[in-house]
Image (cartoon, rainbow, N blue to C red; front, side):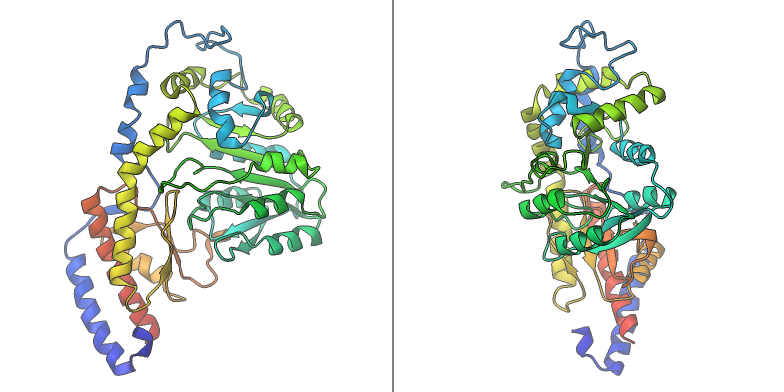
Length: 410
């Protein structure tokens, strides 16, 4: 192991690693693994949807989807999303545009949080959540994971101690980037916990709720039902989209909550828009037919991307595990693999990869304000590159980790 080598041995190793890294750099690669994007093959799985005959363009209620109106979405689209959101009532859901991130932004904007507002942020977490909160001047408080689950005791303690803590924003299933799924106990405690702020909210981004990578998918209770059962029916807002199911720029998204919350959203949304793309909603409904159709479609996605996740984990195990140069877990779903190297090496690894033609998400992006206090976490996004490019990118990544680790020990 590197940590057991003398300074002389480390210097000799560093020279050897610099040579290996230089050979990879000389290949002139230009590979991008910076975002969790579907690859072309995944996008192609939904091409048929573009050619579906929409008939008279009417929804099952008889509404002409080409026209204004139906600002909360057509019934068929709501029925598709209800199981994804843990929503049992059509009146508790709104179908939006193509991006759930926009719905999250709008929901936080409508809350009109006062100066001094704070949010709890599980870390490592989703960088775009942090960007939204920072944009609105909301202070972010990091909360760690504990044994592959949210540190719920820390959440309960922080939420109960400060009335300025107004919410938590999270990806509860196959979390970004670790791939953790919150336990049933954690969901129940989030729903029932005592909070100093009477208007404490849970922003529940169910982005990967159907993105399974195993034959035994994770399951998670409905946070909407748990909040209702705990006497806090208005606490949770749940979001999801088809951006990584059909087309990233041509999907549909949804928000679900209590009927009271949804009615309040509808009232304000009526100022913002007369209605979203109902032809897109109709197209999705005819393509999938029902939630089981989504499940069958996601098996096709799994067939494309599971080998990529396997490749990344196999290379990390082969190249880095013998010398204990990092920690990672093989996710059961989602879009990322979270890598933790030696302290104070993540920025250097990302820099070395970039110099060798492999672009990764910036080090620190998985923490509020882009600052990983230990500078060790890197998010790996395996889905977009073809297998051959992914293997080359991981060769560069592993070489960069080895070199950065040796440098840090010197």
